Amino acid sequence: MSDENTSKKTIEGYEIISEVGKRRFAFWYRVLHSDKECMLAVIHKKYAKNKQFVDSLSNLEALYDRLQHPNVLQVYRWQLLEEPMFVLLEAYESVFVMDTTEKRSIRKKYLKQLMELFEYTHQKNIFHQALHTKYMFFRKDNSICIGGWGVYYFPQIDIDRTYLPPEEGANEKAKDVYAIALLSFQLLAFHLPWEEKCTPTDIEDRKRKQELRPITAFGYPESLSGVFHKALSNYPVNRYESISIMFEDIKKPPRNTRRSSQRSKAPTIETKKEISNFKRDIKVFIPVLGFIAVLLAGMYYILPNVESENTDAISIRLKNQSKSGTSDQDIAMANKIEIEGVSFDFVELQSGKIRLGALPADQQAKSDEKPHMVTFKRPFLILQTEVTEEQWNVVMTEESDKPDFPKTGITWVEAAIFCNRLSAKMGKTEVYVIDEGVVQWKTGVRGYRLPTEMEWEYAAKGNANTIYAGSDDANDVGWSITNSKGSLQAVQTKNSNSINIYDMSGNAAEWVWDWYSCPVGKKCEEPFPKEVPADYRGVESGEWKVVRGGSVRDLRNKLRSSSRDVLQPNEKNQYIGFRIAY
Image 1 (cartoon, rainbow, N blue to C red):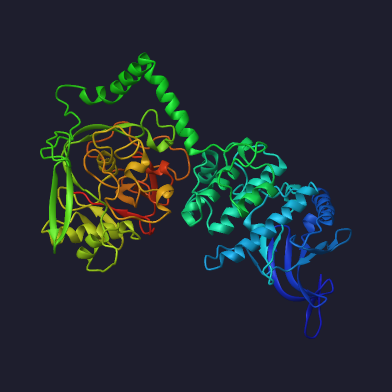
Image 2: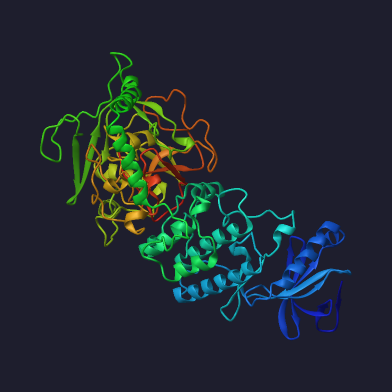
């Protein structure tokens, strides 16, 4: 198939610059054609003899004949009627990459080209239906070109759903409009509206529930956030009907996304609040329903905690004064240590029995948040705030310029090392044996350590059955992506929970001791033992450590007291810190 002369290799009359290698159905080469660098795809013989495959290529050739636009990946020659079968197309400079150093003006130029291309193709009733960054290429002249047209002709190719709408059976146009909305977000923000660690299952779940990061988190105004809220709605009827209308709003975001009566109305937070208030008012005028709800809640949370006279009642029983200065038996007793003028304030939680896991009415709960009864045989202390940079520095002899901010960007193992060093400084026994990154918990010793997952949630919920740590309104007690612009905040700048503990919801997410026992990204059938042992420390081993509380990079659903996340123990994340227990 190739011939060779004294100095140059050629294939089908084209001078070979380099061999790219095998990709799917063809072997690829970089070649010269009329002094222009091109890509040559030579179809494998087994596919060239497959009639269905050849018919698909012929359909693709006919489609490209209709795609006469400068931002379409150019095809110069099709040889489909004789062997060897090949396609000659333009050589692009690079595929799409998330280059955060690139100027926003350049990205806006790419966005304009993308929008104009798809306005053109949609006018001709040509739809991509499989848009993805892997089909988005950059040329040397800073223009973009889109490939991957007609991949649906080839049943052998699995379509990546990352940029497709969450509902099954979306029409051709709807697929493109939704995908271009996501690509537009990515071009402007240099990020997609979910965390990089999200699995494909997580992504589909986020899209389906519209739990997406707003573009305000990346420095853009609230008006543009409204545009993307509409464009990426989980209700198809609420999205933009055409790319041209969406593009106009992205270029000049309206103060109110309801630009005309012809456009569908996107649900807003205010609308949801009005509906919620209406439902609440209805309940006020139907006291019987209110009484039943209170009765059921009381049966669910109170009865299991008083199973017999010998069972310790749930006991966050406080012996000191509350923040307001009044005596209160339901405020926890704080203890305090100090190192070189840096204080560590703790709150004490008493032994007892409590139901942990998602609240019965929590519709955002996942399968790994199933309610479970937990017994604590002995009291423990937990730090009132996340470990701050100042506290970290005084123990680890480091320096920083944000003393009141949570210490983040550390591995789970490094958090365990901190605990041991603090124990040593305070003359306590080190809790952990640490050997080459393997951490073991000594039995029968008491020193500073990471809280278990059960202890963490007990402390977060305190003596109140609220969705978040101290409130049913996340904004009261936590920093999330919706109110922090994705930036960490100083500790204790939101309200505490019911027992005077801060930042259990949001700001920095927090490492805890436990291994995660469920398959990551899949439904969890049994997240906890049917009978949870007293003072439970989780399973003995695993791959992922549990992270609790959510962070400034998360939507509010991650700030719920029962929400669970994971990270491998030797990985770092600049939005994950920890607090300590004793």
